[in-house]
Image 1: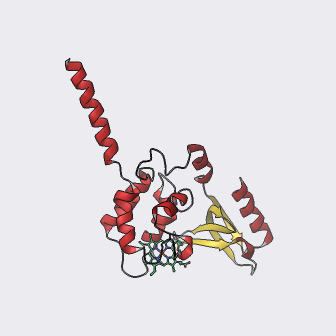
Image 2: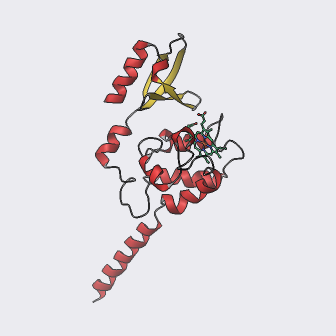
Image 3: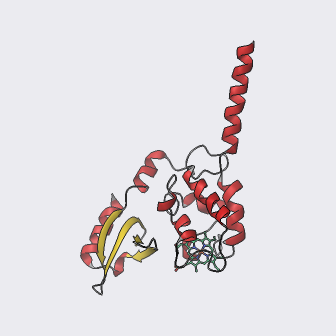
Length: 186
Ligand code: HEC
């Protein structure tokens, strides 16, 4: 009898831990609604980003790398020195921490056990190690940056100062463009 009770309380405790895990809807969306929604919604997607739930889900693996805030453009955008989001005002350190922790905890959404509905195997492909390199553009300018990922016809480059650029692959010199496309197709 006693052991039954113990089992029950253990089960309940496991449930309460699960219920406390941070989710997008509960911990992040209210912050983004307040600070980002007017420019990043399903109608008006500045830079292709919308904070609405279904759009954010599809951004897992793109601007959100579950478990890795530093590699996540969503997090970068609110902490970097230049062009920080939102363009006017700033998030409090508590709000920034909530977003960081949500990504760190696996970027979960309500009613979802995994990482935003993206399968583990899909993620390992997306969240792979950046490729450090020197990239030359068509004007012969050399950009030293980490290539994080390729999104459609753009290379997502992170400079040494943490700034992220969505660089059009078409503006890169042939050799660099080929290297970027190879990385993107792996
Ligand atoms: C007043 C409008 C406005 C608000 C508010 C705003 N953004 Fe942006 N955001 C933009 C614009 C414009 C761009 C495109 C900037 C560019 O391409 O240089 C952008 C780009 C981005 C990008 C992708 C490209 C990049 O620059 O890294 C992310 C991610 C982003 N915003 C996140 C956010 C978040 C998170 C918030 C709220 C904390 C926010 N934005 C609030 C206008 C806004």
